[in-house]
Image (cartoon, rainbow, N blue to C red; front, side):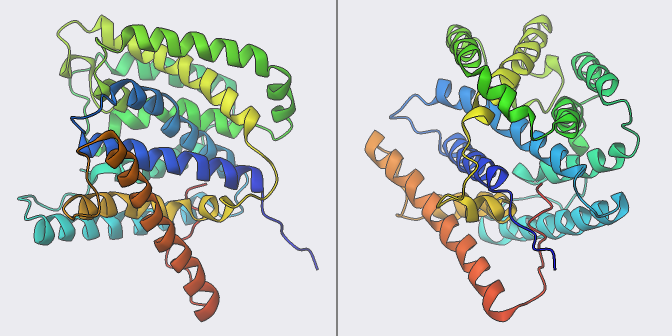
Length: 324
């Protein structure tokens, strides 16, 4: 009998990324006045979702499921989560909104984009050509004033190169990345320095990459330049991070293995905790404490799901491999 072993490297990578996704989204939601988090958030948005998309592309080629099976599975999850967040916002937060399939709830844009990437994956044969063309298309589409956040079109185009890069990636490339750690480290320092110089002119929303260039700036050249810089910086920072992620099992690998659970529910947890005394962003210390609280609650939810799954042996409602 063949025993399938976990790939702890990617579990650790996903755990690292989901933690920073949660921190980034919670700080962006809270916008603490006691602490200037702008540059820190710029750094996080420079790499965390690009790397997550990269991981999804990598596992897309490793999955034994057909494209149709993957698309149907992710569609069911997306539809269920859309309804969940609609009900949460309408009845708990009393928000005035309508349920729209092509208007993703907060962070759920990723699931909708993933559907499109899975469909495209069947047509991505010459990966190098697709990588180049997808980069060009992403840079060009920002000039199209008809493209925005609807149906996650802008993000689908922007993050597609990372998905293709993930499809191209082979595990043995990690050794090459480790050989160039010093080069990647020095290059990353340059990226972070340039980002620091640009921080006052760069709105955080630019790194969301969810709409046209003219949405925030009359001059389209600056957002165009930032998008180019985002690509360069994310590949450099991403390469550095990939070279340092451990391959052995860690205390966080279970979190990485179930990162989709945390991704789906972190928006709800952030919003619910924000209206309770459990989180408080009035001082820098309380900001740190609040972030730890949010992470702990999500860890407990995730571990509870894992425990319940092992005890009751129920059929997985959410396929935790979907995120990879």
